[in-house]
Length: 344
Image (cartoon, rainbow, N blue to C red; front, side):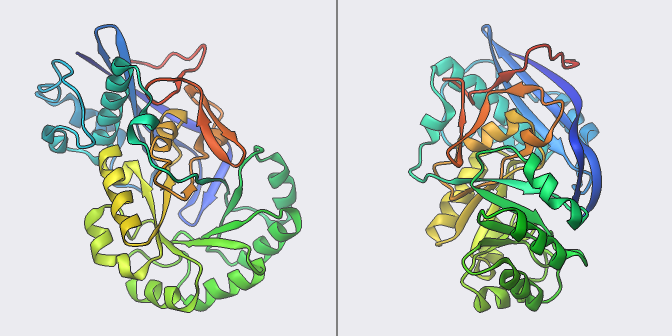
């Protein structure tokens, strides 16, 4: 089995703003696994606000013994072989295990979605980053069609003007994402009221990740699910902080791979939580991998590919408010025509 790595910077079509700041793209590392003529792909995408770097990911995957147990394919279960847990990078584990899943599913001639199954039909959302409220009507008009929910980034002094601009320009359900930018439940309640009756489907990470008290208080003051992002990144976080939230946004780069994401989604649903499958500006590859778990979630926050101008992969689409992939095996996406990543 042969492993290849390719660093790449994914570039946005226009600068993307959150409470963390404004940026023009995201550093990534793509993984390629080849076995008996079949190729599987994985991705580690690393925004500047996460602790891991492309250098750490590459170093963790180049350590001696990384492929010791990948000499052949012997079948697969929802839990990966134990040795994957020894990869010294969460994002690196995600990328390598994603490539492994993709490779195995292609060898088995099945799709990832058919393997992971699930019975829920989720709604897909598209995200509008921070900006001048006066530009929102034009920016909304440029958004790709087909997404059923509009997610708006908040957490700045312009929140009121932004919500009013969105109300005027768009009538879709809204998910309000403050990215830890608020400090009081009253700010969230005011934003809900400004959005209008029945309009808000969720409030994502309104307060600091460690502010369990205010998240719990807000959850007690509204029936709208308060959805954890930074506060819940793995199964242990869910058990510690789950009572304060009505939902969780699961991200591959934070939890470490599809096996862990599935376990987290299954546990969250057993606890009555809304499950949202999120991304960290991944390409069509990373988002298609997460989409394979769509049957276990109510919301899909996987619009990263539509924000990019140099997506190396193709095959992910939006259909009737949800999503779909083109290919019949693996994650259903493939390298885009003319793309040449620097595999090494």
